[in-house]
Image (cartoon, rainbow, N blue to C red; front, side):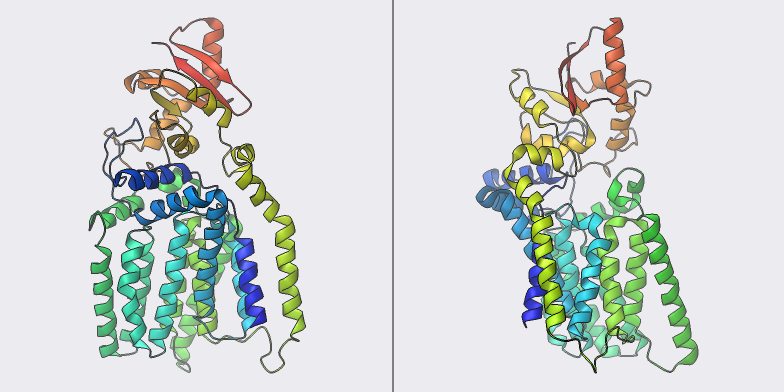
Length: 475
């Protein structure tokens, strides 16, 4: 009991992270809008591109939670909630599998550095999919163990999931794989019961502000080549890629070996789920936690040889001491950064996952003329939050949206920042009043050169610091 308490305490402390997700700003604004007006962010009112564009991304619950916690407890509240949600996810996965507790702790801790590219941003909507994914695995483990009554928790789970994050399709994948296992085992009645659970969970998921359209939005995200646009949608690092590919080959080999020998039952659900989520992780690094959680479930459910002897367990003091040392290390090495970013606004601006143009924003707040801003993409969400009287050009909601030109808004942003032919015409077309871009970009260098030669009189630099530069469009 003491070891488990220390283990989950260590998880909580590790994930007591500052909220540095670049989408934090627009999601907070959506939550505040709902709390003050009762309106959800169904129409695009924040940006210049695609005004009044209607989208059906399932973000109703998350922005409201974000706004409620932030308004009452500030950044520290978000850090605590992030730690609480991920600790709960680890607890559900921990209790989904049976084995030596210390061995489970070791494997679950290994997942953290392997998935840090996802976890490091702190509180964000995707962590709820991580939680709901592990809850689904927990419920499935109970169903596979003969406790079918746990299946009644699935429809309400998917109802909440459908209003929180688009990752609910991963839950349906798990249920489909469970049905495949039951059919393989010729458990016809049980497979029928699970199918009815799947259908009822799907129907429950339609209880959301957009109905069936949330699945259309998920489909759009799967069709747009986001890996060419957004960092977290690119494949994992070469080391990750090689490791996961190697594991995938081992899994296929083990399946073939089992089918040939027929000496032991094929663990269909763990094998298929591991293969499916490894493939998804190979496509996009944002899926890494789901792949590694599936691999852990496979390892313990398939009864592979234990790394630690169950006959000769480790002395009690050894794992307990290691967990205590781990907590102390995290407290002294990690928490100071969280403390700094949560209490010092300038530190938040300078040390987040994106360096924010806070001083330039303060400059724009003082300007009497408001209007459309052409902005650096990564700053869009932050500007929606900090400059509500302005309209941004592009932000993190929009990469999968389709412009009338057939291009992604992110592509239109790149064409201007890279000074591609017609960039100046685009600024006039969208009635841009201000440019807030990174210092030293191609566009900044071009505007400086043009100003020095006095070849143009329609744009003027009005502010510059080490991070950002502001240009005013004169006519």
